[in-house]
Image 1 (cartoon, rainbow, N blue to C red):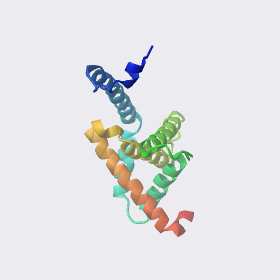
Image 2: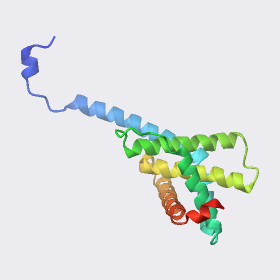
Image 3: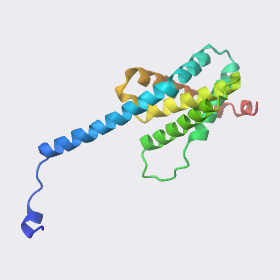
Image 4: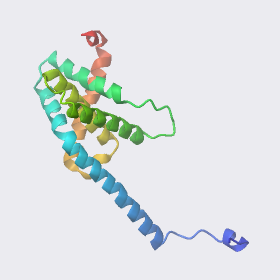
Amino acid sequence: MLTGTHLMSPPRAPGLAHWKETTVFSWFGRDSRRRKIREDRKYLEARARRFLKNYLAAEGTTKHRYYEAVEGASAACHPGITNPNLDDAHIAEATAEAALKVVKRRSRQASDSHDMATLITDAYATVAVAYRRAAGVYAIDEEMQKLGTAAVHLLTIATSHMKAHPDENAS
């Protein structure tokens, strides 16, 4: 039971117990990141690399198809969250999870029987990688961080392009 003297004593500086608690919880965070990175390497990495490589090889008007695919995938995965208390990292993580689910579902259904289906699935993989990067998941993996940065740049370019050229969106 707390007495008046306990309530009035000054707070103690964090000691060894606080350090142990912080260290143990940071391990859980790292393990979660590592698990997500392993999963992303399994389901997303090759698809995102292929999408980015094909985008870079595309000429002129063909690039619009890549912009449209990645912008559409991103828009489809944005959570309808209106809670102002959520930070950007949580929203980015929710978007990445939604895109990952689409990639997994499309992979299970083996819907990549033609080029357009592959392009769409790869666009979702690229969106997932971009938002995982934005959420800070790849901070402990330099290679995935670079891939995520490239995906973020493409998504930014695609969003700008689609807003600047609304007349092409109907094609």
